[in-house]
Length: 101
Image (cartoon, rainbow, N blue to C red):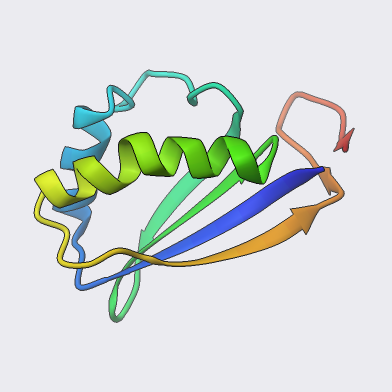
């Protein structure tokens, strides 16, 4: 079943987020990494929130360990995010029929 991942980065900025995305090779115009379905980011009162949907929690956790963690530190993100997971029994993408896991 697909998994939604909500990451709250307290004290982080959108500029730091942009740096992380460049370091991961995922800046504008690039596809999601293997296993990633969707991604968005927004500023919050306390930092930034990144919300992803992944094919599986395991794929996300591998990517987070290998990419998000190290590159966030390199970009100066002050601390690791608070992460919550949610099962996603169905998701829809513009131009595609709903996908059920």
